[in-house]
Length: 462
Image 1 (cartoon, rainbow, N blue to C red):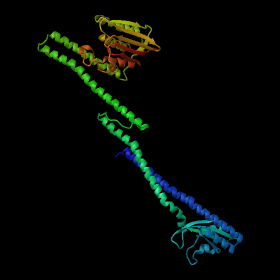
Image 2 (image 1 turned 30 degrees about the vertical axis):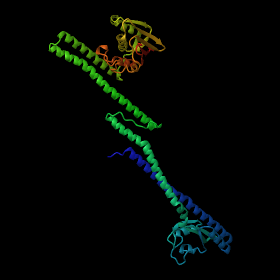
Image 3 (image 1 turned 180 degrees about the horizontal axis):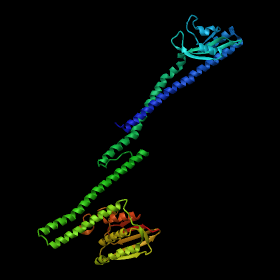
Image 4 (image 1 turned 120 degrees about the vertical axis):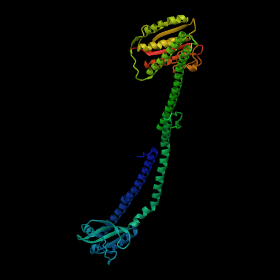
């Protein structure tokens, strides 16, 4: 079954609403005519007839009464007929004594005999039109002595309505067209952006994230939806760009050691270099490849929402001392001094293995870029409910435009550095994820030739 589009549904709804109001307007008009105008005419005839009946009771069948009838006839739109012969009521029409038509039916004559007023709408006995009639019974000495008929052709009653019929028709038509016009405006204002979103979503499904919806100026819900949609497009575009960059970086990082391993294996096979030297290089490249793969797996696990952290009370100062002690040999070899100033009472809640990985990575970077005879300051302080670890070096520093990107995967400040200048470019990305998992903050303060300060803030054990 074919599904109707939202545009078709909106138009169908608008058209149905327009028809509903048009039909309701027509029905209301006729209802008001029937209930108000026609009933008003009947009420007027009944009141005039009762006044004439009262005059009949006062003056009797006299010339004064006849004059009163003439006067009322001339002053109103009704035709008034007085008959003093009750036999004419059911036996023949007072309009034409020789007519076989009766003015009232037998049931209506019985109503008159019972003293009830009769209201009738029926065809005229002689003219091809309907009439509105009211019959008022006249009694004398308790017997039906006659009747007063007030009649008026319905065409004359309809005339006031017919005079405004064209105006009503034109007004209703204008109202109908106005609803259709507003429906089109509503469709363009609300449905068109949704259709545009549908088209852009289709392009996004095909991998094109460059499309945007140009209705951000709107302040209503559609404008907010468009802004959210554009934000989503931008985010997906960035994710796609980073994904491609990540794949390119991974391919490059994996291809390099593999190329070395393959090249030295062929060189050993062809006796170009000594087997011992070739195997040593191949082993070093295999170790580097293993570290890269482990870092990638580490980062993938840490970026997942379900990665478990073993949270336990940790003497943070002791953990830092243990890590710094492992760097004593390297720091002495590079003639770099690591100076510690730690608050021994600092207790935090965290995963000791992961936090050790954080401190180790940050110290390794500080040592790697610190010149000889310089000092690395490692400080741990408690500020309120937070523990603050600061590692400061006197290295070449990081350009300001690169500071915000150093925790991105495979990001290198020195794009031209060799493989010996650093690791895989994943260390700081892993550090950032571990700190994030501990509800902490990681901050880099640096500048060219100004050294680097790394600040890690973690919540204390409560």
